[in-house]
Amino acid sequence: MTTNAPLSFDDGLDRLEGLVHQLEGGQLSLEDALLRYEEGVLLSRTLQTQLAEAQRKVLVLKQSLGGEYRAEPLDGDPS
Image 1 (cartoon, rainbow, N blue to C red):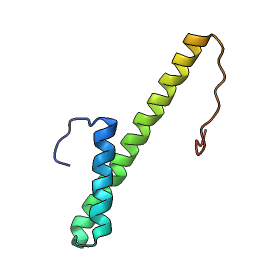
Image 2 (image 1 turned 60 degrees about the vertical axis):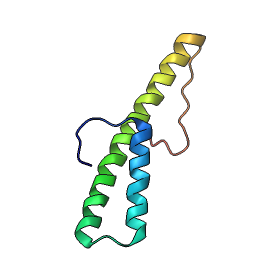
Image 3 (image 1 turned 90 degrees about the vertical axis):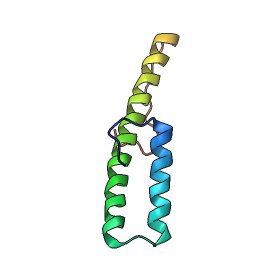
């Protein structure tokens, strides 16, 4: 990735899928594969952070709209 501008969640997910396809293609040199893998790991962390923030916003909205609030962890949520 050549830009430091933050990606939208959808653009980041598209980029991550593209990286996976490139890595699965087996046509990259070891150096290029490592660079793309590293980019994918960093992008994955960024997307996880964006998703967690969206989940927090949904919980706040649910609380403010209905008055009742009960947080239930999503499947796979470590908290």
